[in-house]
Amino acid sequence: MNKFVGFRRIIALLTGWAIPLSLMAISPANAATSLTLNDIYSPTKVIKIELILPLATVQALNNPSTFKVYKPGQVKITSGTLTSGLLDINVKLKGTTSMSALRSTPSFKIRFKKDEAGLGYLGLRRMTLNAMTQDTSKVHEFGAYSLFNAMGVPASKTGWAKVLVNGESKGLYVNVEQPDQIFISKRFKDITQHIYEGVAMKDLLVGHDDGADQSGSFLTDYGWKVTPNKNDLTAAISSLNEADPAKWYENLNTFFDRTSLIKTLAVENFIGHWDGYSGPDINNYYLRTSTRNKFTLIPWGTDQTFGENRQSSIAGDTFFYPLVSERANQPWANNLKRGLLYVKCINYKPCRTQYLLQLKAVSAMATTMKLGEKLSNAAKVIDSTLVYQFKTDPSMLSTIHKEQTRTIKFIASQQANVKKALTTYRVK
Image (cartoon, rainbow, N blue to C red; front, side, top):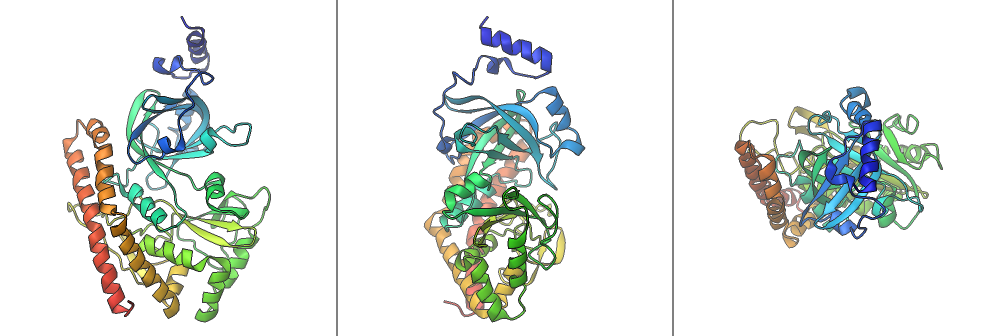
């Protein structure tokens, strides 16, 4: 018996780790190291991600009180003949309304152990694996982030992965680049002060600079050790709640790159991201601040986009909300307030005009980048994995295919809606 294999079997018996025999002969020291980020975030292939979790971690991730507590484990990433070998990680479950126990099909957040340079695997510190339980098409996040990036908005890369936990297949996942300090360092040249995660329905309102790093209306994902306060939020909130529209518009350019922000709002609305910042949920976004108190809105959580109406039982039913409105519905609730910055923008003509021009640019980009074709190609890439995953449920596979078709048709519908909005407000 190979000495390494024998050693792993002994460790498994002593610690309760459930390690498939196929993984026991792989030593991290001898594993191939030729995987790249292009393999991990590729739209043209489905890689395999194997999570190997000890019994204590399995129990914790099946216990609601510890779903969101990082627990130890290992991961092996494989793309064709290339492999990462076994990597030490910490893992927790992800989600709010989509949260489910490990025994089901949960989403995961993985944190790699730091290397000598203070980074993780291939420079990654974290990895987010979304089970897409709220995306029947399985291509919404890929399409949404592709459009954000095409428009020059700082947004995640995505890839596909078949995920296994202790040898049990959990099916197809989308692997989404996490907006953490590594993500930020690749996209910004100035110094980052904080990365905040917005809490749903809270917004940039007076009093919402509350709490410590992991409490209040904005949770601090990065920067608290160096700058243990939310003074940047305090300054921004004070200025961005200015009542005079003209002064507010000036203040907006002080605390944001105004053009970039308006562009982000336009993409959110074009893809129907009602669960984003400018939608009625005021949810799923990060705020990155520099040491000069300059903010950037970073989109997140784009699974419920492209008009999917999960509340409706009607096949192919599409959910739309207005491109220009102070309030809007979402599939389960009506007449909700929308994000402060978006509402103030559409109520001040110079800002509204810029927003509509950006909508026009987004609509044109969807054609230029052949977004519908990209979604169709992505559906082909992941189809064999889905066929295997739902081999005992052909009706579900049929539903997925119908939703993919409806998603592609949504693009043309939104392009028509943009034209109507431009005509209504006399913007060319």
